[in-house]
Length: 247
Image (cartoon, rainbow, N blue to C red; front, side, top):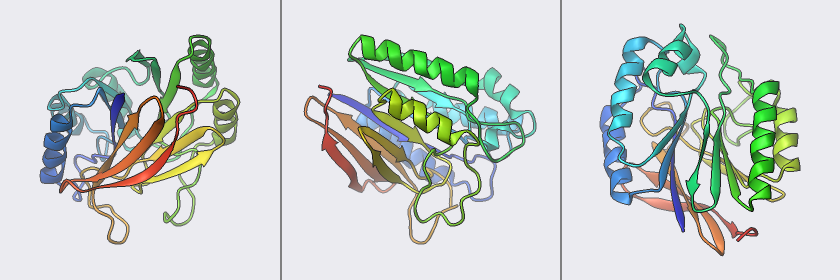
């Protein structure tokens, strides 16, 4: 079995950022001891260097291997440069997890809220998906912006400008799971054989209704794939449970 934690949207530097919520979640994540933790962007509120430094310190508290991609807030005020220096490369590939390849994409655009993957990353993603298919590996794609609209998030505004093209590639190449953040609302859509899973915010009070701060976990075994919602107080609930058709 492969066990993954999916966190998103710290928003360090925002008035709504709650350090205690983040530290509680970090303790829970370390106790869970996942095979990898995936952070899908908006580590900071403004992309400032001092915010990125603090966000990097929080990431260092997480004991599991990490994949981190930037969000639209991280690309403000030349934050993309700070991200490359203080966090790590904006996208890459992690494939040491029991036959699973994880791909990170940078969907951020400097000083803009909407996102874009772009043709170069799209081609890279397609090549990685082809390579995984040839090796009979399962695939996970991580990026900040959602590709499919998320319920309970109001008028659709800050989306990928090339969402249709990216969605087409993902479905055509039969990716297994797509992880994103951005909207602060946890949800799972199933499109053919692909699960599109969005995470809430793990440490911000930018929440809708009575939604609590939260993160997701993903269990992948030979029979099933399960995606759970986890709140900072330790409660869990199932977001999706479906057959693992590849194992």
